[in-house]
Image (tube, rainbow, N blue to C red):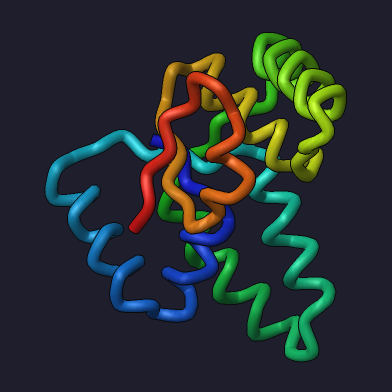
Length: 130
């Protein structure tokens, strides 16, 4: 299962639903990965935060918990095709979300997110909410 930035931010903020889901995934020994575009989203947030040093510490601790899923050639191909299709249909999503979806599709993995508005537009993508 791939973890979206919305889930990880909620874990950092100690959102009860996110924390409970994180504990559930750990108990069930579900393989969880952070897509590399999510790393970008998190670090962008750190550097935009008013308390950057505190945010950096929180993000660094969280990222040490989970391995990453790279945006490799297969994921890039899937993301590019997906992004082009959604643009042509007039319902584009953020480029980072297309990359995350490409990684999930290439790995046949679900994405855990609150951002169903964007990820729900991706045909064949399994989206789980918390």
